[in-house]
Picture 1 (cartoon, rainbow, N blue to C red):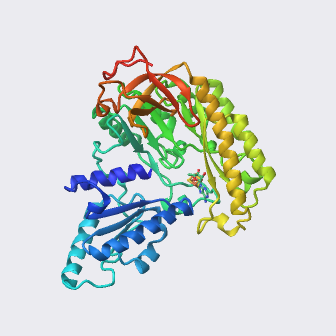
Picture 2 (cartoon, rainbow, N blue to C red):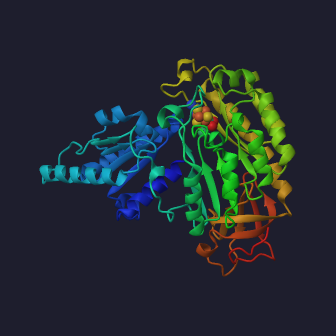
Picture 3 (cartoon, protein in one colour):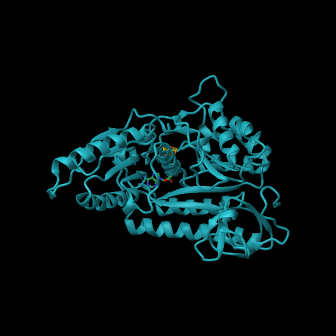
Length: 460
Ligand code: 5AD
Ligand code: SF4
């Protein structure tokens, strides 16, 4: 969601005549888009803002902005204590960010004129423009479809906010209530993206499969939206993240099973494999209920792989609770897991609980769960060796001379750049790759002999 928000801000600024700088140090406007979900993410931003404070002493005309959940959460502190921050704009409130930046620029220019030529020891500027609760949603922007991860890939936010009561989570307070966008708007946006060459769209929402419940009387559900978007012939892959187990219903299961171009992975965070922990987290389901829904899904769509998020070291989580999580991960056989150490968040229900699992023990559980997942992923990767998979190329891999991309299961695949091929031309293409080697988090392969690089003629 933050990646998309950054793209929407970038597209807005480009429309206003701004251009991306070659590096952060060359930029006259630096916007930091932030996340509050864990303390670690916030710490990195505080340290970045500290560095920008030093830079701003040298360059008083520099515009520094903080966007996203930390802007919402820490607006008072930023106003009072961070005079080098010029604008503070909450999540999804950036629809008129170009005007806000222009205001900050003229304000800084005025301050610079007042203070020059003397260089003061103090910061100039100050959180002059604060837009938090009532800004214009980024989704209201007629987006510039050209700004996207690469020519074939785009994100579309279908809803903002979250109405769920998870005790540990700050998102409902920073991002506010669920607001879904009408189906017609989404179809129009998707069509514009596809007309511009996009072939893979990932729909975004905090609880993406609760889409539409605020759009009363419009029969708007994720299943219906998937069916409508599936009608766009040139759309080759249609994914959606993140789903909540409580809204994985028969209608959605049927849509996933029946629509061949819907991605074959489902990000369905379970958070814990212990009913006691799930209850205190107020997740609203039991392990048995989660498993039943997954069984129903796999009965109709056996090729779908499951991904999950887990929180280890939640207040009161015993070793026995944690071991149930380990068993659950193995039992379902998840293809991928993101594991997080519990981090108390201000203003949440769980903040009132004693954070009683020691840091070292949280770390241990984190490592154990990651190792269990790694083995499951590696086993799935080994099963791919010898098979040919369709890969949507995302660009050069970290290893020189290789390209990387993803399968319909969101598996990461690396393969040598074919001789004479141009990396930029191949990025965004679908290529058939024969898998030759399984690694822990990815597979390696080679372009299958029958493969072609012309648009649309590659077969999986
Ligand atoms: N501490 C640790 N992890 C958290 N998450 C959300 N809030 C917290 C927290 N306070 C994790 C959940 C969620 C993912 C995006 O972040 O697993 O699914
Ligand atoms: Fe946070 Fe729960 Fe909403 Fe996910 S569903 S964003 S974990 S409150």
